[in-house]
Amino acid sequence: MEERIRYLLRQYENNRCSQEELEELFYYIRNTRSSEASLKRMVRKIYDDIRKNHPSFTYVDENGRLVLTEPDQVNVATGKQIRKKKIKTPVLIVLVAAILMVSAAVWLLRRDMDGHTKAHRNTAIVLTKKFSERSEQKYLLLPDSTEVWMNAASSLEFPDEFNNNKREVLLNGEAFFKVKHVPDKPFIIHTGKVSAIVSGTSFNIKAYPGQKELIISVSRGRVNVEQNQNIVATLTKGQQVKIDNAEEKITEKNIAVSKIAAWRQGDMIYDDEVFTDIVADLERIYNVNIDIVSKDVPQLRISASFRKDIGISQALLIFCKLSDTKLHNEGRKFVIR
Image (cartoon, rainbow, N blue to C red; front, top):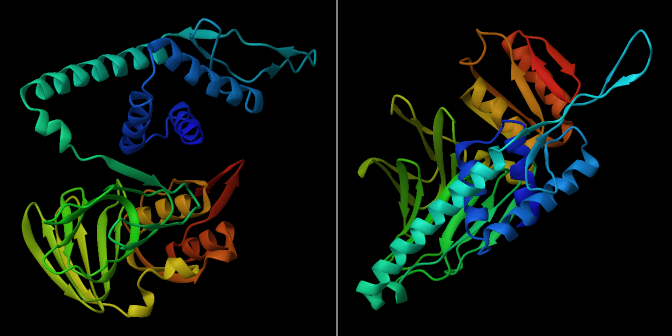
């Protein structure tokens, strides 16, 4: 957990935290079951470790205050370093205090509810949350023997034991499911406004935050796709649906089964996908930062396929050629102009 919090804090420091990552950071801090003092020590320890390897990062001083530092500059005339003053801000303390206040309110609410009914406490569902980092794929075996392959930067929440009526999980990102068939006990994957309802089947869901289109592809069995509690598509083997997250436009098509979840074998396949979604995907898969400067490019639809092992530079060159743009490498960031 400490390593995950370390990553999330770095994302926060670089102003790259998505809403889901920020909520995850709150979740970890909120569930440390520590007093305010021990919580500060934990966060400070992580920041101290970060400071050793990355001096330019913000850290927490011995008084628990957040210190913003900037790299030293060099005076061109004298050749001497100019050390900038440290700026102190209570941002982290305010953040921690807010989290603790919310946690206290939740605890009080739960205590009151438990006072009304002991049965409610005994039947509370405890969810397990699993993550995959950038450039990482992860395999999971769920309590019902359903198999899940998670793509980079994804998360899956599920109970330690499914109830007798249905099996429900919450996906954030991309995953391929091989669902164990259980009669009269549907398997439901929730992701935003869309849910996929199956009994026993194999299919892929791609639903990252900020993604223009949610994509579901079926390699075996049947999948009912529900949006806002209404069935909007029923897919069988070799079928795919794309749902525009903004306009809620729905597009169905046939797809070769061999192309479904090809990412598991290292084959990167993009079929008529929006350029911004592709670039975001490449950032997650290769763990890099990519900026699109050209204003005409982001909404272009592109189809391409290549092996993951060609590397990020060659992959980006393919898309630059297809979009008539140029690739620039500026430090640790790629820029498409």
